[in-house]
Picture 1 (cartoon, rainbow, N blue to C red):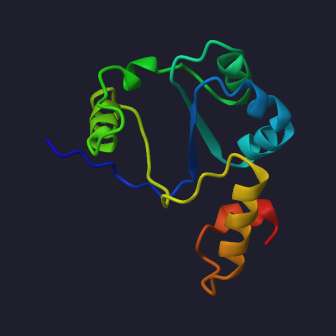
Picture 2: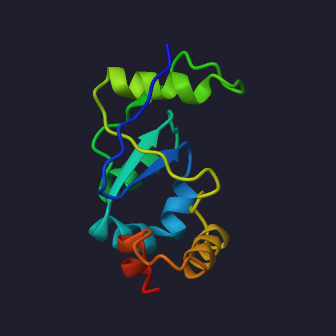
Amino acid sequence: MNCSIAIEKQISIIVPVYNEEKILSANYSYWYQLSQVTELIFVDGGSTDRSVELAAKLGLKKPYREIFINIDWSSNRVLNQTVCKINKMHLKAAFIPRWYDVDDQDGLNMLIKDLKGKQDKSIARWTRKYLEI
């Protein structure tokens, strides 16, 4: 079975979390500011540190560990299996371009550079507003 996700116009950021306490702690003010202007969806993969606790303060409503159970990791089936589980659980999700892994300053700088290079200012309008670019 091939699954797909309906794209909505609202901006949501899906953040996979697995023992990311250090990253979430170090960048907490960034994540908090971001949570004020967009929907942050943290999906925990069974963290054993304080990741879930920190993510809960930022918007995690439920850990959804079951999304990651019985997935054929390191295969070309991971994405489709994950999307099928998300749909079966009646959760919302969306795709972003593959290279957008903005969980550190280098990734954020890459996003900013890419957006500054786009002539069409309607692309990522709310992200541009938040980043003031």
